[in-house]
Structures are given as C-alpha cells and as structure tokens.
Amino acid sequence: MGQLHLLDIAVVEKDVCQTPDEVARDVVRFFDPRGVCLDPCRGDGAFYRYLPAGTDWCEIGEGRDFFAYDRRVDWIVSNPPYSVFSQWLRHSFTVADDIVYLIPVNKAFNSYRLMREIYEWGGIRCIYVVDSGGRLGFEVGFAVGAVHFRRGYRGFTEVVFRENL
Image (cartoon, rainbow, N blue to C red; front, side, top):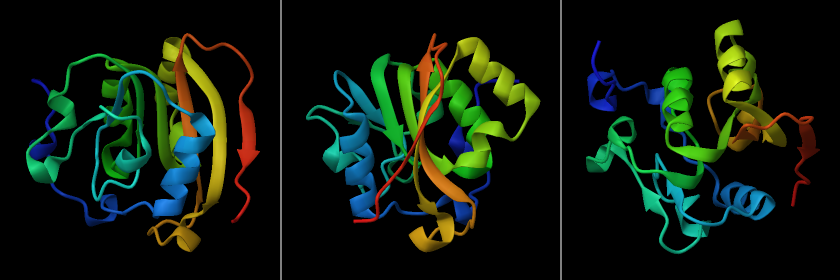
C-alpha cells in the first residue's frame, strides 16, 4: 500500500466542523506553542490566526494535503478530521514532537493499538477539556478537549477544564 492521501479518501461531512474562534484562541493561549508550528487542516483559520507568525499550514480544499507533508515542525495544533484520526495522528508523529488536537477525547483511547502506539511514541501530557461537542456545534456529543501528545513523554496526564468565558 502506498502513501495515504486525503484525496484518496471519501469526504466525510462530519469531518468538517469549524472550531469556534474563542475556543481556538483559548487552546493556543493555554498551550503557548513556540518555534515552527503547523496547522495541518486550517479550514477557516481559527487556530492558524492565533499561532505564531510564520506558521505553516495544510488544507485539502486548497490542494495542500497533510498526508503529503514531510517537513519537521516543533508543534502541530489543529482540529483534525475524526474519520481518519488514527492515520492522521500516526502521520503527525512523523512530523512533530508536540501535537495538540481538538478532538472528542475518547478518540485517543478508542483502540488498544492506538493507545499502544501513543505510548511507544511518547504519551499524553495534558487534556484541556473544552466542552461537549453538542454545545460547541459539533456533530458529536462526547466531551471535546485539546489533547497534547508529546514525543518521549513519560509523566502523568494532567486534566484541566476550560472555564466557560
């Protein structure tokens, strides 16, 4: 099997859920990413506009496929497509040392295989619990949080709840 590309995958409408601007702002402020950053699914730019100047981006709708991205960055921050999350995270592991994804929190724990891969790569440093998907306007009702994956991390996982502003 060759390199996976988003263009080879059927579009799943539920994957297109724009992050509320204030949520993106709070997530970026909470994690304070520095160095070379990437927003691999820029969408309308909610995360991108709060990331440091010079942040790179991908957006399949604009012909920039994250699965074809191979440059190293320090941080990835975004709201990835949920239907291909496992593959997306695996590719992210090849690109960055710090990864923050706004996801239904259970996505990080959906399978033994994925949990093992996360552990072997590093671990989850923090889960910044944002709200329920329904209240954020997403088509999922599960708890949604910004999950911070870090290469080589072996500490405890901190859980912080966002204060509704």
